[in-house]
Structures are given as C-alpha cells and as structure tokens.
Length: 336
Image (cartoon, rainbow, N blue to C red; front, side):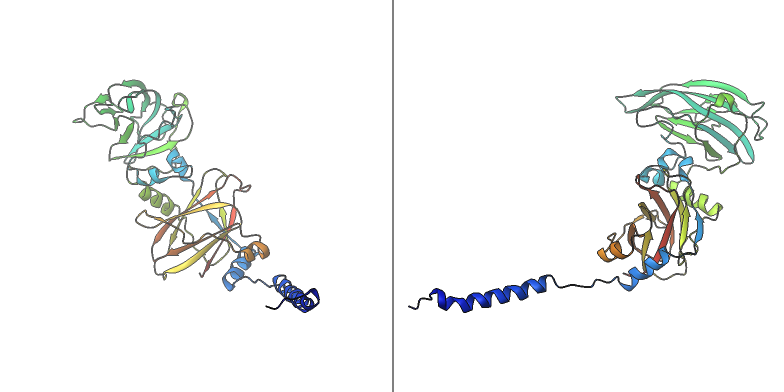
C-alpha cells in the first residue's frame, strides 16, 4: 500500500485549484441573450409612432351580466332581462326598461319591490310600476301610469299587458314573470336605461332595442350595427374603452384569411377573451413573456398566443384593477 505524504500531495492540490478556477470562469462567463425575430417585430410595432384608433363597445348597458370577469351567463342567456334586474343580495337595480313594438314605443317599466322565497330559491312576488304609451311616439308625456303587485310567481307565471294590466297566458301579453326570470314577448324589443326613476321618465332613448335571443347573437348584432371591427390587424391599434371598469368589445372578421398562430401584445395589463362564431371561448396556447422581452422591450405588459381560423370572432378587452389608463395599444404579429 502506498501512502502520500504532504510533499507528494502538493501537485494534486495545485491541479485541483487550477481545475476549480477554470470551472468558476465558465460559470461566470458572459452570455448574450437576444429576442427572437417575432419578439423584435412585436416590440417594433407596439412602439410605432403611427397608430389606428379603434372604438370598442360597452355591452354592460344591456345588462349587468356583461360586466365583471365572467360573462358566460350573458352569452348564453336568451332573455334580455332574465334575472339581471336584481343583484346577488336581492336588491333591485334602479334601471328603467323601455319597450317598442314595431315602430311604436309601447311602454316602460321599473321594478319597485320583491319577495324572495327561500324554499323555492326564487322570487315569489314583485311590484312593478309601468307606463303605457298609447301614442306610440318616443314621448311619454301623455302615458298612463300604473303599479301592479304580481303574486305567486314562484309556482305559476304571471303576465302583464301594458294597456290592460295583468292578463292570462291565453291573452295578448307583453311581459312574463316566471319566478325571478322576466321575459318580453317575441314581438317586443327592449332598451335598458341604467339608473333612473320612472316617476320622472319622459322620453324613450334613441339607442338600440333588442328582442330576446342568445346573448352572443345580441353582441354580434350590436357590433355589426356600429361597424365595430378590428380591420387593421397588421397595424398598431389604439383601443378606445368607454371606461376603466367595463370591458370593450369588438369583432374580427377573418373570413378569407388563413389559419394562423397570432400573438396579441398589449402595453397595459388587460385580459383578452376571444369567442368564435359558435360562442365557444378560444383558450390561448401560451401567455408567457420571455426574459429577453422583459429586459429589452418593457412596453409589452401582456402577451397571449391564439390559434385562429377563418371565422368571425368576438373579442373582449377587460382592464385589470392595476390599469391606470382607459385606452391601450394592441400589436398583433404572426408567429410561434
């Protein structure tokens, strides 16, 4: 057996120190990180000095169900009023509902009180104040005012005719009360005024009126009527939101365009939601931001990647609570 004394170990110690030195140098060797071509293109576009102003639509005025993070109930609801006339605490919203029939302005209605039936988990009675406008004009100056208490609707639906008051299902009716669900007849259209008092109501608004039907179809109808489309997708878009709370909606008609992987880049913290023509939510395949982009292009705050086909899409942009501006820049680039 061979033993190494201290003198014999010195060369080994020296070699070990040299090896450790080279290893340390490799660990601390300077490395260069670069953005990909797609990231460079996105950064250049979002910092462009030329922009296209894009107006978005606030769907919240149709119903509170269009506000907040989750609007699934608004998309699938077939009633314009439904149960959105009171909040989660069963407190009635002070909205006024104006109805038209054909070219005539028929009446207006406001909910005054309700009784919630806990065993059946729905509304059992409701008091409404309403106006019947026999003239059919937008003016309610000569409208007949009345108040009615509707009872027992947890078990049996009730029906209101603006001219005759409470009627049966076999009569001509305008409004149906079925528990907490409120429907308008198929030949009526509705405009919802957010906040107000029907006792001082005098004239019908000139805005859009909608029949009952799937919420997604209503969104398409609203945006198409105002021609609110994302047209210049290859340019820097300046999204105009109506306020910092409610989201902005817009359509993107990709008819005749190839299926592509598209990257949405925003300069503010905003949630992006996209639905296809079937009303199905399109889930992003990636929402990460590389360290290179964070380091060299701080303008990009949100990056989401979607696979989009040749279709009509409904887009929703909803600011986060941390967002300080109402309007934001959107840069869309192709790539992985």
